[in-house]
Amino acid sequence: MARRKAKRIRRRKSFSIVNSIFSVAYANIISSGLFGVNLLGFFLGLSGGTYGKYPGFVSGAGIGIKELLTDGSAWGQIVENAQKNLPNMLIQSLMLGVTEKVFKSVMRKPLANVNRNIVKPLLGAGVRL
Image (cartoon, rainbow, N blue to C red; front, side):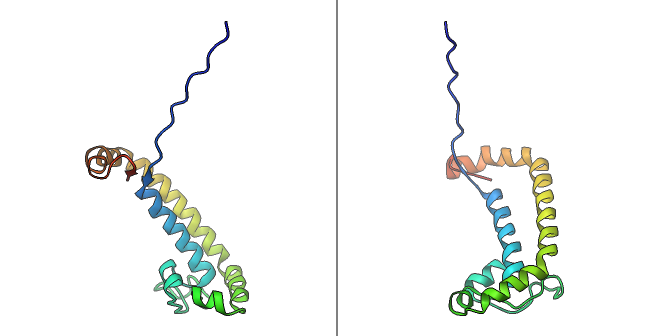
């Protein structure tokens, strides 16, 4: 007699607040490296030049979404910013990846407790920390 395949148990898809925060951090690294401004400044058009309080950390002209859509020379500036800031972007991404893994492993039990006792009763099973 042939064996039957066990039915797969699938987890319900849910929105993770912690994962979304780390995703925004990665997007911020990319936007500050390519466009010279943080993610919020890119979408609001706050092209101020350098990013953060350390001017040498990410260099290049600030480019907002308005300049990207209207100015044809903005693409050349993006390539120039990428060439200047690629090493910093790589280091930031690696450090954020390590931080994410350590944070999730250290906070696994406390986050599970908060999800079980606070988030799930208030927001339902579709949202978790």
